[in-house]
Image 1 (spheres, helix red, strand yellow):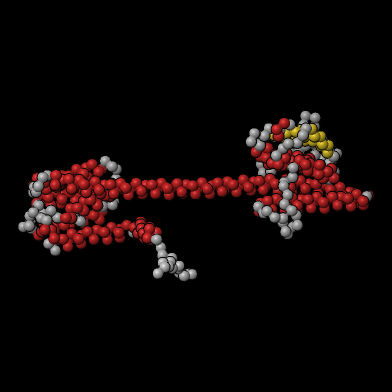
Image 2 (cartoon, helix red, strand yellow):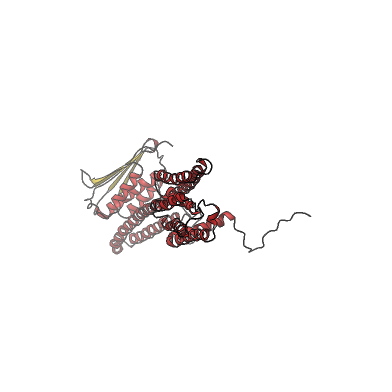
Length: 419
């Protein structure tokens, strides 16, 4: 007959692997123990006390004792004395070991030789698990002393037959305790590292979110601030021209509409980039486009001229800037012209000198003939935003009154580092 592998029916519960089951049960037991340690200690101590009493009442101790005529009350006392102190084995293992030692010595001296004396090993395990390693030396000395008393008082075979087994079981209990302790410490280290990495990840996420908010604020400031300043200038000019030259007023309104649409387009593209979409914005009908660069400088200057600010542009050199550097210079020039529109006053003219240098270096200077503007307040975003943009590429920004009158902004970006 061919072997047939039965596939579980759809929706049937898959058998849990044994290792996962054991780990799940172990986690539940440890969690319960962490919440109610006394319950676990009472149950375990009660188990060993019951085992010691069964050995006493059942007469099992008579099969190994060398003093069968020992008083029953002494045997009962030793049974309880070797088991009851285990209740405090985890919190005070050294004290418990000292408390068990007199009963163990009496047990060895009289020759009763109760098997409950092996409960010393539980205490040794907890000493290896929870206490410094030097504590194990005097624990070994106490157990060796008990075995030596047995070998001297009730010799049976060579002394090594009474001492060596005790030392071997002590070594096994110690090794188990050290192994568990090492694994526990390793697990705690991994958990602590995971917690620290999680905290660091959250901090990095908060820093990234703050940086992104600052970037968005700069972009929004540059886009809205500039275009609103242009629209305000156009509206003021159109208001004065409406009575004398309706054609000029119509042109101003047309320029206002064009500038508004451009501002909306830039805002939508910025939001599209923030959403990280790879397809055109279906609601606006505008395709995704890169941020403006120095190729759009003529359009920027044209809009400012339409708003009533005469601007001269002088460009030298061949452009070879990365898109990020182009955006930085463009935003600095845009902010400078916006400030001139807002603060320079009537009759002002502006001049832009843009110089492309080797390997991506660039300098740009904006000067105007106006009366200048007040120093930016602590909450202003214009000048601080320009400085932040420039600092990203290791550049410098100078802004202040021009010696010949007016205001001057100078930005310089160094050469791009080799890739």
